[in-house]
Image (cartoon, rainbow, N blue to C red; front, side, top):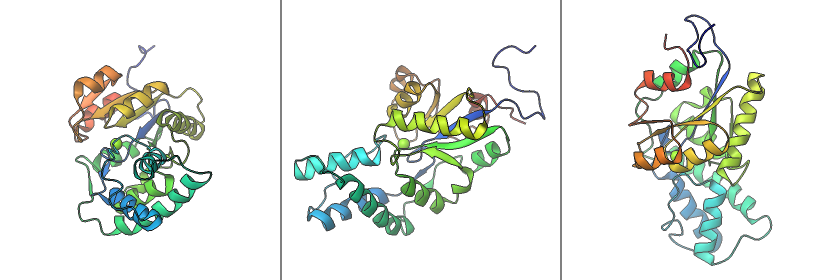
Length: 243
Ligand SMILES: [Mg+2]
């Protein structure tokens, strides 16, 4: 009998595992498209210019960003149905911004890593992202990597990141038909780490957007990498065979 946690034998699919990726700063940079769409949204809807200027969106969910912008720009909480209406208009504006965002790029190591991971039949690739589902699809499509992700937890599922990560874990386990499959989150902020831990998942954090490695570890990140070019380290973290 193999010791617990040992990698599966070469050539065998191994037990089911769930790998959940954050999007912004982890898989790609949208070149400021999100911020420009938010600014256009608030200018069009409320006549407020530069409403996104004071927002630090890293690790925040889209509904939380919209709520904070409303509070900052208009000094009030959203009315009933207002966040939902804003979200719909935001994704419409984001579509136009994403299409011609000159600074858009995949992060180092992508898409090679995804290609390697997709070869593992029992590794279920999903998303744990604060993006609304439609916004996530727009960003991944522009980067040509949407086909790697069959499910996820999104900002449109929950405003709270821990909750959307729990939802992503549950969806991954349903796809894997294994209610106890371990889940792993890959993200770039302490918010990703905190949400992963709250959802009972291990977290690998990357330093691509300037997070402090000490803070990430303190929050519970099991592994911290400069970026996702170190495919062997990611495979090792996920407990899958590197062959
Ligand atoms: Mg991120």
